[in-house]
Image (cartoon, rainbow over the protein chains, first blue to last red):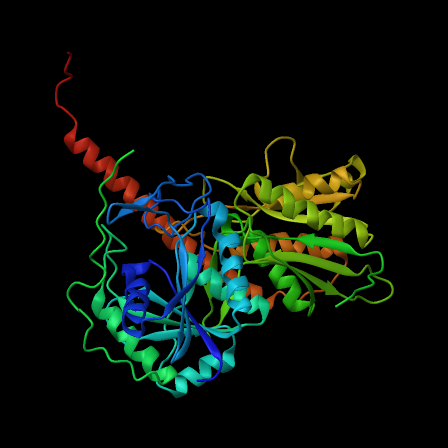
Length: 231
Length: 255
């Protein structure tokens, strides 16, 4: 893989995308090369799920404590040279910041020479095979030829969807792989590691990554974050 | 694509109640083979994209189509899209941008489309109307449109009409009666019957011939769908009344 491929994910439907990208970051040991901060990143969202942005609910700003230190909400860009990937660990902005943040992410992608984007996300229809969407019909056909069909029709909310849509407008080719998951009414973002694992298997196949998934924790992936509130 | 329209009329229709305005605009685009010449994007649009049936992704946007007409007729510019801006500022911004384009293209008359929501089943939708001056009100009457004395037209569909008036563009707003049913997830059920009633008036006012047969089919389907919705609604009301009656105390209690 000679050209730099961007992999984008954020917390979303059953946290499928974020679990997948966290595993890639852990496994490939890429270098953190950029961070994006925004006044539009809430630490507590007033909408459920977090990606259901609403103009009247901006969320609450704040910091997360990590090992005793303060961490601001941010988007992280990691560069891996073998394979040649820019891993983008996304974060949902509030309604006012969604477009601005997605545009900034694409600016950063272009700055680093990303030619193609792969978005990793979840799709709440129950278990099943990974399905796809893309910026061009040719890409959809190419994925079908590799055994990944379409399956979802409708709105794709939040950070990752907007990055994909705005990428199309800039002429950047993009693909989205959806890991199918059972929706959770009580907690729409409750982690589904199994769906994330299937997603990674498909990504590995499509990009010929030969990704070693032996260290993937099917039981606990995505469940490490706990929040103690203070104000 | 650059256009040089001659004395164009503009028709506007964005998604709104019962999908009347959008379907009206979309139907005209399809039947008149309108050419897309401009796309409008805004960060005031809802922050999501649409995955289409074929698997491709589409950003939310508004669109301008151009329909070249014969020499004796006004050209047509049609404004539609797959969303409305969410915030008040965004709705004004998009409506204003569109009206400014109308001004630049020398639009001689703007026709805004909208739904007239009624809280009852509609057998034969009446088309109501409003206009920017009294001569246009008289014109509306000639086409069987019932002029509106009071009321409001919310969202971008209403603002387009109002802002066009501020720019001295003669404007008419046509509103077709619909019960505007929604699905359990809150989406509007598209009312093709109301759309057809509106288009019958609009096409006459524009002096254009449009094949209504495809819309007839859709109108029959939506009529059937709406009839079922009304049945379900009535059944629910009856059940609630029955349940309330069975729970009513036999003797009046005072506390």
